[in-house]
Image (tube, rainbow, N blue to C red; front, side):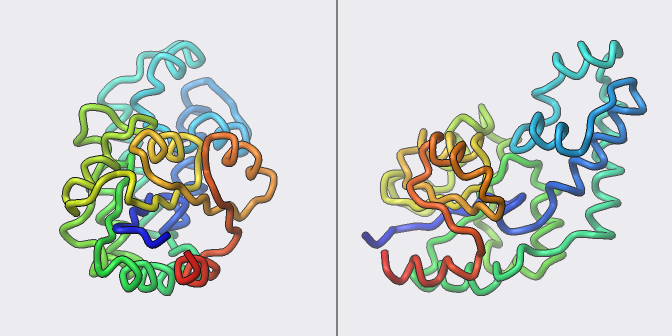
Length: 219
């Protein structure tokens, strides 16, 4: 089937930001008294808003998660992203193909804050593809795994959720896409993550972004 619109998650799909962001989070949690390995931190927090994990963080650190702590997290995260961020390999060609296949109806629908999303897209040369069609879960009544951000993107593009293809990489994001009624394909560079992504509702896995143009052309 041809899709009326193609909606991309940002972190882990368009930009390789998740190891950077989670590294900052892991360091700050350790400074607060909760030591995690990088893998443990990724497993606990990937695809989720840090602020939504306040009860867990406070329980494990024994300290209040204050506005000042969050402000420091955002500041340290942004500095690291500005210094180290790269695009997912092959994503520029993949986004161009999606734009072509969907007649320009593409959007970025992220659970992250708008500043971070726009900063990252600009930094890796993707902003021109998504300008005016960027949606942040921070601005929705509910963020992922709720479907609100994907429904908002579909509404803006004047299509139904059921006519959209969502490109995601986490269980949280796939749950949001499925909740919006969309077809979800999972970018899955690590095969061990595949079973969980399929169980969440992804109808297809692909391991390299360079595969996406061919998959879209054949859909």
